Length: 65
Image (tube, rainbow, N blue to C red; front, side, top):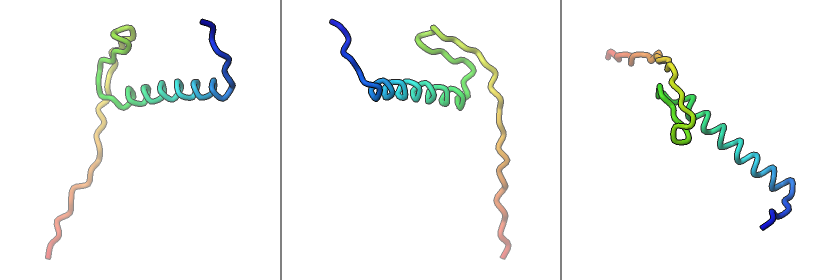
C-alpha cells in the first residue's frame, strides 16, 4: 500500500500540529511542581529541583469607621 501524494498545506498542517503539541507539553512540564517527570512509560525520566516561588500578597486593609 503506497503512500498517497500530499500537498504543502497538508504537510504544514501536520508540522504545526506536532510542534504545537510538543510546545504545550513543554509548557505544562515547565509550570509543573513535580520533581520527577516521566514520559513515554519511563523512556524519558528526569529528576529536577523545583524552586519554591513565594508570592507577595498584600494583606487586606482594615477599614475603620
